[in-house]
Image 1 (cartoon, one colour):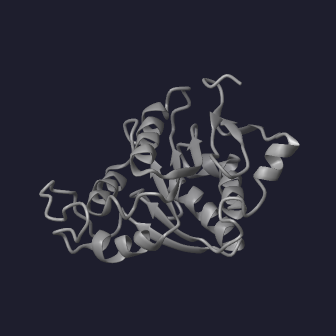
Image 2 (cartoon, helix red, strand yellow):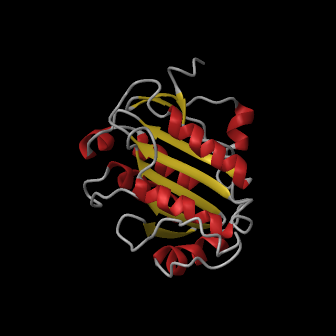
Length: 225
């Protein structure tokens, strides 16, 4: 399959879909692959603690990335998993100052929502889900603020499962390349297990993403964990 035409949107342990623009193009797997991607293959049939980090500054009924998050959360809850949603765009947050006061294993100097609300949930989570609109070919500043603050608990946040969902207006085959590379580098550094990637190109408005198959895919990933 030509990588420049198709974007893989689901990683390890889930159903494999390929999407281009806003259309579902192929969902067929071999029998062996289908068995491996059965419901519960990621969770092992146990209830997972999932943290979803939204980062769009737009409202719940306008945002394209929040739409995908809503669908994923609905799917995950339908499978019985526990989901905590953090709104990085609406909560009080501060960027990392690089002061090293935390020593990579302690409280941040900022006693903000990241430290008091999000971090406790992330530390006990099995799966971290990053959700962002594509801004100048990277994640939103709101999400980057949270990601940089991972530094304070680098070791304790390592070894978890992770997923990313991103939306963009652009439809060029290279639209998501920089963000995908950033995410996969983060996964490697944090020793995470990637369980899903949705790169929703051609979805610049709420109506566009709602007409696409990306929302259905997000739901299926959540339901199949």
